Amino acid sequence: MNAATAPGKIILFGEHAVVYGRPALAVPVTQVQVSVEVVDSPDAETWIEAPCISLHTTFSALSPTHPLRAVIESVFAALNIAPFPPLHITIHSSIPVASGLGSGAAVSVALIRALTDFAQRPMPADEVNALAYEIEKLHHGTPSGIDNTVISYAKPVYFVRGQPIQTFNVARPFSLVIADTGIAAPTKESVGDVRKLWEADKPRWEALFDRVGEIVRAAKNAIETGATDSLGALMDANHALLQEMTVSSPELDRLVLAAKTSGALGAKLSGGGRGGNMLALVRPAEAEAVASALKSAGAKSTLMTVIQ
Ligand code: MEV
Image (tube, rainbow, N blue to C red):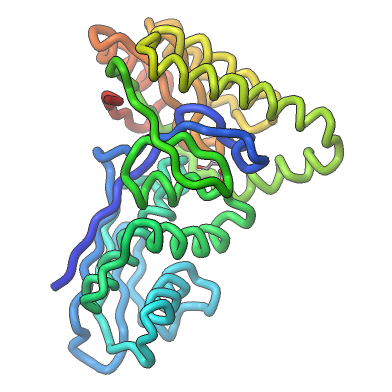
């Protein structure tokens, strides 16, 4: 048996603007993950089981553009193995789908690793990342590549589209509470809507993206110098810009407000928006109070993580 896992991810700063060449900061979230097992199939067909999305199917029954089919085909093409042997693939995930935690990219990365291990041809992270990016294009249309990069390398990243991976140092650990609105919101839709608005008024949107870029650079500096309390105000400012970009929602705004009024130093939506997750910067002593305020304000689930 060959098994592989991949973590979730959360964007700290810079979502959406990152699609347009501005930097963004993101970290892996290891409390949630995808695991994939690959074994020889007991019959002549390749079977895929993903109980978390009620999927039980053969490879040939998947549509030609299905991301799982695309991962399997691209891995064996990259390994020059044709035809590939019949397999039994099982996918488990604790990452909620369409929630901003990178579930699609994590499935791709874990599946690529499990298949390449099965073929006894493990790939380095940069090759895994390049393959996962091709699959992200099927999920998202015009992805920046940040999700697959954070998840493939499982490291904090300061990401600029098209540039080699840069990581960052955390001078002083800081605590986040992440809360899920429970509303599934495909990234493809919010990214597509932003693109239409950008096309209709490029000067206005480029200026918005520039302001996000400045926040991201200031946040990186604060993280690297240990000025972590100042991240709160930067999160608030980034959330206000995301509201202006139309990617927040009443539910996200309610959770952001609940976090702030229960003691968080700052809060913002994270990922594609419109639903999915938000995050709040907290002092460790206040984490429980903020998490419980978020639950009372409608969060479906919360998790706490320390970035170090
Ligand atoms: C999705 O996690 C982040 C977005 O910026 C899209 C992307 O970067 O591809 C909204």
